[in-house]
Image (cartoon, rainbow, N blue to C red; front, side):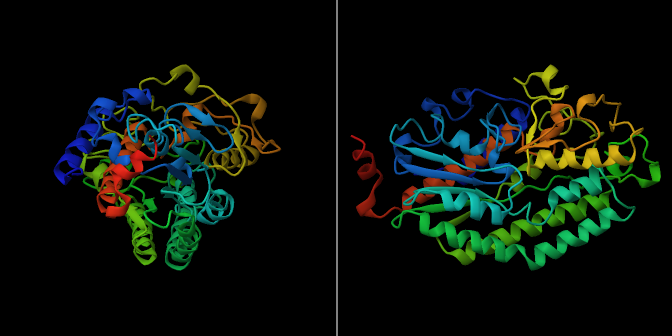
Length: 410
């Protein structure tokens, strides 16, 4: 008997309400230890080979400790959590291909990740589509303005994103799923496609006078503000992307399952600009996305306030560097910092400084992960995935019972 909807909602509410600012050792993840698993671990013993592919949301950018440099993968991402003892349980015979990469479009996921997957996979988790439509460009043009080329750049970016959602995204997603399905175990293999969450609450107008534009020398009239209208538009875009993903999943058949966590984040007040919140409020209890200056329990706060390791070319983080340096080249006297001036790394200012696959990073490290999920957001997705996996286990045919798979390990 798998998670009831009541039990799942109870777990999700508790996770989001109490722990969005916490980073745990994976063996200490609440509600999911060996002795307090949502299911007997035997129920998941059919998952002997699984893979995790996608973009920075699948890589878990900024959540926990960095475990891979070239793709910015972190150990509190939902794929890492799933592969831990507290979730799928200890199984020495289980394999996990973790190929998700920051900045990847669905086409890049198809070419560079899906093509590298093993065959006969029991489970594939996927997050892709946001980079196809330029959501990071909107983050630049309409929110932080690391670089703004003209006064109507935000409107242009919004229009371009709507065009890509309507005209390009469905085909990209279908192409990716068409390549992934043959990688599955023909008897019971499943693809679990995660969507995205809306970033903003839209309950009041307190944020209408808030700007997160990063340059102090930019004229006030040129800055973008988090108005109610703008927040609604950006939320509508996220929902439109989710709808395209859900449609592609439905079209692909019962081998593919959509995992939608958006409503849980919204219902538990995990977004920016929640009612009554004066932004920025980077360490608000319950906030599920990173702002600059967000510090999770367990983070090295001192290190986050300094420029850390350089970043991989083509990643979300390298876009921030490129935009910032472009502004510094045009306006070397401008000062960086939406709330207080930040001292940029003097040795790396003024040029992109690409060496091989590396881009020099010049900002405080907490800027690398803005607008990405904190550990409890990944914990939420991991719980939802476990519930979906339990549903799949309950539907495995009598000839492929859970006990039968478990006995193969004996």
